Structures are given as C-alpha cells and as structure tokens.
Image (cartoon, rainbow, N blue to C red; front, top):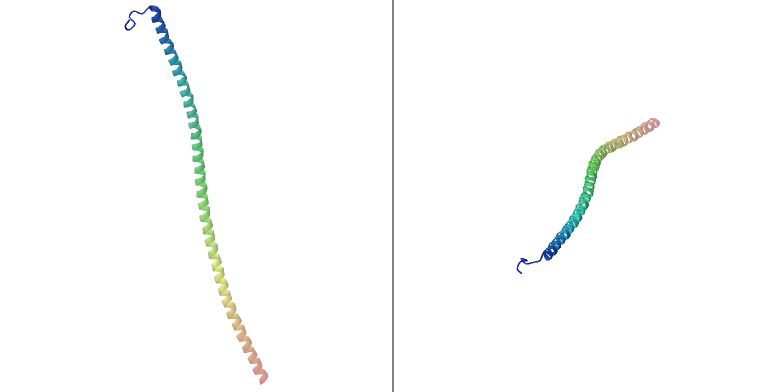
Amino acid sequence: MADGQHDNPEDKDKREANRMDFIVEQQARIDASLELVGERLNQLAARDGVLSGRQENLTAQVENLTTDVENLTADVASLVHGVEDFKDEVRGAIQNLIVANEVTRDLAEQVARLAIQTSQRVADLEGQ
C-alpha cells in the first residue's frame, strides 16, 4: 500500500476528519492568538493615549514654567533698576549731607571768629 492507493474509504474518511479537526483546532488557536494580539494592541494604544496626554500636560507645564521664569526675569530686572535708582538717591543724599556738614563747619568757624573779634572789640572798648 503505497501513498494510500489501496486504502479503504473508512480510513480515508478518518484521515480526512482528522485533518479537518486539526485545521479547525489550528484555526481556533490562531483566532485566540489574534484576539490576544488585538487586546494587547488596544492596551498599548490606550497606554499611548495616556502617555500622549501626560506629554501634553508636561509640555503645558514647561510652557507655564517658561512664562513664569520670563516674568520673574522681568521682575528682577525691574527690581535691579529700582535698586540702582535708590542707590543713586542715597548717594545724592550722602553728597548733600557732606556738603551740609562742610557748610556747617565753615559756619561754625565763622561764628567762632566773629565771637573772638567781638570779644576783642568789647575788651578794647572796655580798656579805653
């Protein structure tokens, strides 16, 4: 019996049924595997959506932080300008105090000289 040439019809039917069972079983395995692959793809797509949402959230946060840093930089520049103005005012006030001190000292010296001159005149007048 070579290559099933003299097989009886029942054996042929059994082999054909076994083949069909094998094909149906394989198809069921393939379908189950495809279903698992589909579920996994859906999970990955959902995760990708979550990650995409997180990325958008992070991008918005970075943009907000960038805006905050720019505003802070502008505030610091304004503060530095204000401090410079205040420093100039203080420097001017100190200069005015120095001048006032010199004028007061000069005035005190003049008053002392006048007092001495007046005292000498009074002494001269009393001595005559």
